[in-house]
Amino acid sequence: MSKAEVVDDNLRLEDHEKQLIQRALRKFNGRRKEAAQELGISERTLYRKIRQYNL
Image 1 (cartoon, rainbow, N blue to C red):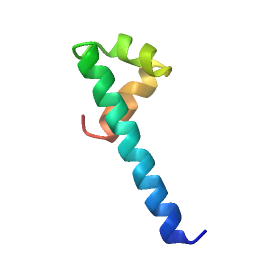
Image 2: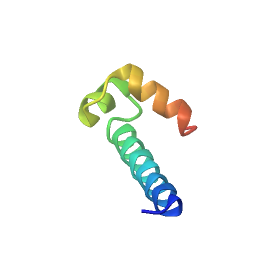
Image 3: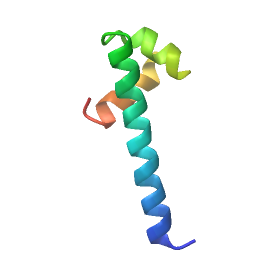
Image 4: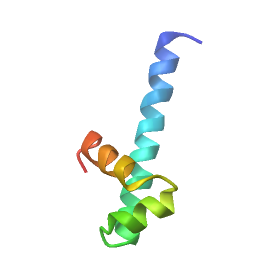
């Protein structure tokens, strides 16, 4: 696998993750605790990803 393929796959994974987080936040009207539970991640991880993706 070339570097370009790895970078492309990582971007797609990040885009997918961002979409999942956005959907969970919408589903629970911005309630991060419930969104984190839905996603199967800790609240702390969700907060970090929200900052990472500027959500």
